[in-house]
Every structure is written in C-alpha cells, then in structure tokens.
Image (cartoon, rainbow, N blue to C red; front, side, top):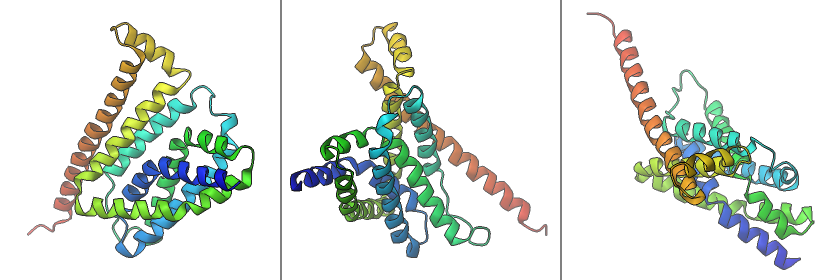
Length: 237
C-alpha cells in the first residue's frame, strides 16, 4: 500500500507541471492579497477534479470527439490567458476575479487531465481511497510549484507567452489523439509525405502558432478599443 501511495504522489508531481503553469497564469492578474487564495483554491479544484476523472472519466476517455473538443477548448483558454487584463475595481468585485481564476483553472484541468487520470488509476490498482489520499497529499507540491512559477511570471512577463505556447502545444497533442480527428489528419499528412509523428508535430506547431498569433491580434484589438474608449470619455475642452 505504501509503495502504491508513493507511486500516485510521484505520478501526480510529474503530471502537475502543466497544472501549475495554468494556475500561475490564471492567478497572475489577481490583486496581490488574493493570489495565494487563488493558487490554493485552484490547486484544490485541480486535485478534486483529478480524483473525479480518475474514478469516472476512464470509462469515457476514448469517446469520439472528446479529445478534439478538449484541444479546441484548451486553445481558447490559452488565448484567453494571454489577453487577460486586470479587472476594473469599480465594475467587477474582487470575489468575481478570484472565482473567475479558479473557474479557468478548473476548466483547463478537465481538459488536461484526460491522459493523466489513467496513469494514476493504474497505480492505484482498484483502490479509490489511495487515489484520494495520494492526490490530497500532493496539493502542497502543486501550490509550491504554482507559487514559484507565478513569481517568475511576475518578474519575467515574457514567460506568460511561453506558458500559453505550452498550452497550445498540448492542445495540438489532444487533437491528434482523438479517434475522429487522428485518421483525418494522418491521411492529410500522408498526402504530403508526412509520417504520423511528423503530422503530430505539425499540428502542435500550428496550434502553438494559433495561440501566439491569435493572442497578439486580440491584445492589439483590446488596446485599440481601450484607447478609443478613453478618447471618448475625455471631456471636450
């Protein structure tokens, strides 16, 4: 039993790097006093969802369209994290910001846990309580990882783009693992003389580019919209 618990904790540590990135990205725009709560609640939500999907989702993991839809959703989350702005305190309460960040983490974890749950379930060997115990123990490790990453994001803002690019790369991987989209893109790649692996890399690069280019375009659009709104609010002299 002890070895199985250690396996679950170790697997979750290895598989939680992406979750720590998402938590840090989602919480970076929160007021400083709320960031730690955002990280703790986000990590807690991530672990609870991991428990749920480890027990339940393994039965529906191979349903057609599931990974494809998840990949598209992850693209949206990555772009949204790039263009996320600090909320205006006059229009949005702090609690809305906090729970909005937790919601973003929860949705991303649903998508990114599709593969992780199988490894944890295999290590548990049919003992659900081991899954719960091992994942709960790993919460402090996820919090520590997210805290470190968020500190780096604050110090080096360019890393926000690197984190979004990582989510885009994972989205491309999900798209190529879906039972519906994989044969289609494999056939498309074969028409250009590409192997499955080369086609998968191409899809991952394409999804990463969609996130970076799409995020840049939306950021410029937001900047222009805010500039125009500011000019309209300026009283005529």
